[in-house]
Amino acid sequence: MRDQIWLESRLDNIWKVLMPEVERKNKVIIRFKGRWKNKFGHIKKLNDGSSEIVVNSFFRHLDIPEYIIDTTIAHELVHYMHGFQSPYPRQYKHPHKGNIVNKELNKRGFEMLLKLEKEWIKTNWKSVYLSLA
Ligand SMILES: [Zn+2]
Image (tube, rainbow, N blue to C red; front, top):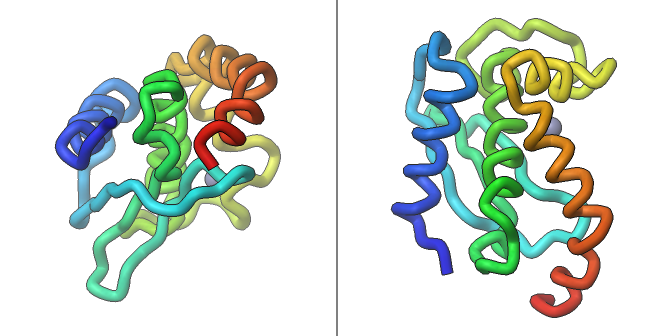
């Protein structure tokens, strides 16, 4: 099982690789939460001004490949960079309009990981989900 320390180190790593030029302007918290089938994570600005990234609790299990957690974190960090649930100015009207998240991830070298993610979800997620739920 993956723990909190592990998750925080994934966040730091992905941040460095994905968007080294983006300053961490507020406190960014990450934690496992929720047991969702159709949602892998989200980012939310909290009342104290920090941003909270949530990663599906099922992803604690080693049945889920590390790159699934990486792409989930990367997705939420793109929202942060685009000014959603973060101190940055909002760059777009809607967080997912026109596939902006994946476009940004592709531009930043995550294309292969996104392909792996898509393939793994298609082939494995349903059965893994059923075995854990
Ligand atoms: Zn999103």
